[in-house]
Every structure is written in C-alpha cells, then in structure tokens.
Image 1: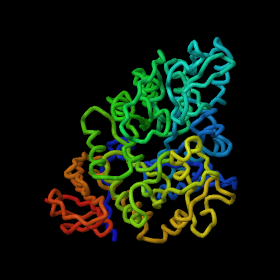
Image 2 (image 1 turned 30 degrees about the vertical axis):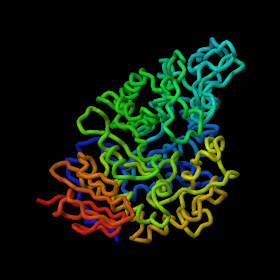
Image 3 (image 1 turned 60 degrees about the vertical axis):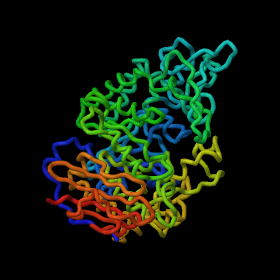
Image 4 (image 1 turned 90 degrees about the vertical axis):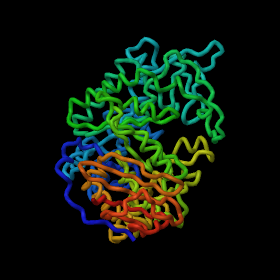
Length: 545
C-alpha cells in the first residue's frame, strides 16, 4: 500500500533559487523514445509527440542524448557535425519545434555536448589528417611512432586495445580514448576551444537551457605523452587492458578547469543555463569537486555512485550524500540510478520477485536526495534490463568484449507506450532493439489507468518534492545508515522532513533516530509511523513541534 498526503502549493521563497537547483531531470534517449516514420528508430518528432507524458510526470527539464549528425558507430557520441541533426532523427526545424513545445509545457531543455572527441568523419578531422601543416593540423592529438614503430605511449582505449591508431597519410598515430573512429580533440589548442564554444553558442541561441558535458575529464591529455603506471590488483575483474592502468596522463590534465571557466563565462551571457559535468574514473569525486568549485565553473556534476553499484545500501547512499557537503564551495550534485550506459537498476539491485516493491522504494529515495534527481526514460515504469542475444547486439563495446562486458543495449530498449501493440506503440516498423516481453507488460497506457502503478506513484512523489522546499533544495543529514536502515533529515525554510528506508527484504524495528511525532507525507510498501518497518518499506515524515 502506498500513501501520500495532499500536496500544498510551493512557498514563494522557492522562486528565488535558479530553476535547476533541486530540479528533476528526465533523460530521453531519442533512438528509443518514439519512432514516427516507421524506420524502427526513435526521432525528434517522436520526442515532441510524447512531451505531454514527460510534463505530466512533474519533472522540470529534459536531457536529450545526442541527436547530432553522426555515422552512429557509438550512437551519436561520435559527432560528425556538432551543429547538425542526423537525418535519422529529423531536422533542425524538428529540434526547434521540440524546444518550443517543451517550453510551452514548462520544461527546460538540456542537450549533450561532446568536447573530448569527434567522429573521424568530422570535417575538422578530414582536414587535420591531410598533412602536418594544414590549418587544423594541431586540432587533434597526433604523435610520431617510437623508434621501433610502436605507439607513442602505453595508453589504452576505454573500449579495448591501444588508444592510438596509425594514419598513413600523416605518417603518425592519432589518439582515441574510445573507438578508433573517435579521434581525440586537442583541447589544449585555443582554436579548438573557440570552435567548441561556438558550438555551445549555436545551441544556446536556439533556446537550449543546459548542457551535460560528456566525458569532460577526457578533454585534455599530458602533452608529454607520459606512460600511465600500472594499476594495483584489487581483485576486481579486469575485462579490458584499460583496467590495468592508472589513467593519470591520458586524461584529467590540470588545464581543464581553465577551459571550464571559459564555458561558464559563455553560459553566463545567457539566462540561467545549467551546466553538468560527466566525470568518471578513479579520481571522479575530486575532479567533480574541482570542476564545480566556486562560481566560475560548472553548476553540477553527474555522479556515478549508483550507476554501476551491484547493491543499493544505506552506507552507499550516506557516503554519496556526505561527499557533497553544504557550504564547502563545491557545486550541486546530480544523481541517477539508471542511464543509457548502465544496466537497469532493478535488475542489479533486487530479486525478480521483489522488483515491484523495490521500484517504489527506489523512487521514494530518489526524490529524497539532496541534489538533482535524474530519471532515465522508462524508470517511471519500472523497466528492467533486457537480455539481448549476441546476434542482435548493437553496442560496439559489448560486441568487442563479449561475453565479459554486459551490453548497454539492454538498457536502451524502446519505450513501451501501449501494451496491446506488438512493438509497444514505439514504431510501426521493426524496432532497432527488441522491447522485451516483461517491459511490454509495463506499458504507459496500462500504468496510467492504474492508480496503484509505479507511474502514478512517480507523479505523486515528484509533486510532493516540488511542493516541499526541504525535499527540493534543503540540507541533508544522515541520521542512520546501517546494513538495512537509512534515515535522512532534510531541512529548508523552517521546514524539516525525515525520510526512512528499509533497504532489506526483512522487517526491521522502528529506528530510534526517527521522530515519533510527525505528519506522514508519503509511505510505500506498508510502512507506517511508529511500527515495525516492513521489507522495503519507506516513508517521509514532516517534523511536528
């Protein structure tokens, strides 16, 4: 049983904060959202057609994964034209219509910016590789071979194998931290920075409200091409040569913050533009703090704490929250339990028989976190990871590292809109990936008609968060985090709420840390005040004097 109190209007003081502080963001993976032309691939008109669904959830913004002109060897993260829309997704006019419709519905629009690399089909790279003296010769990272003909350094690619590929036209190697078809931009070059800032301005002039900056710590390398040292063996599985190194020299250069300050100076010329860094790796936390410190750098960073965790535990949540203390001069965190690169959370975190209950608890937890919650499309439906057989794989990383790497395709499957349709109402043609029978049964039309569904609960919880400043942008204190129970306290504008979560499949005693007197704002899975906390029970209580 799930219970929520009536929603009151948000206090006027909340309007003083920038729109993005505490905002809930909905990630759209356009390839898999809605196909309007029957080619089996989602498109921008499809996103526009379903913006009503997103707005009805009560989120503040959408984040669009790449839709730019691309050969799609890494599904849009290999950009061939930063200022173009790939024909499979539509046109610039379609993008403009999407932005206009989103703004009419009160939704902000964020897009990805990929500044570390381009496609090898980008015009910049075509010119750069012609010879060593052309105007763009230094726009990418080129280096001579060692005397024995081997690559300039021992750096390894994220997707497997050396991070260097020989190019006979220049008689040099070029760097690629990802696919060989994703040559590394030379972020140290001021002309490259100027060109990338021009790209940002192009989209800001079209009404974009924010950027997610992809793989930002890969934007610059050590120009001396120093070999990376070996990583200590921690006992964790190593599925790629990349895992055998400490990546100290192929990424995370000390000059990146200066480029970030140029990005921020540009976005400050516009309205309240939201900037969020994607930073992964062994030093991710310190780099996220660095990239968001002060008022001249980015607003937020996209945490990886939960995306690849095998289990959701109280201590994991507590550790993630306390790493972003209030008043420390660092940015505002953003949190995601799922995205297009990580396996669906319900498939990682609980047994199949517990998924319905766990999905409710998970959603209540996400809206209780200090920061920006990011919902990945279909998370509001409780979608799970789809098993994609090898002959249907599209993900280049999974194909290259099969079967050791779990395919990202299983989290990129199409949205199910109508349970009665063979393809879930996603496409009139054959979808680029299968939907999965279990997910088809969780379709939007079926859940919208069921007041007890996860979709309806998500709408209610997002409305609750929006109406309570303590939840939207308040401080956070961890009152308890043991092997099962998590107790948080959020406070803002004279309002304080306490949030209780039993993350275990067994009942637990009522925690002494939680107030015994209060107004219950929300409860899921049978949780109630001052009683034993049921398995996966959770509730939010407003403190009463």
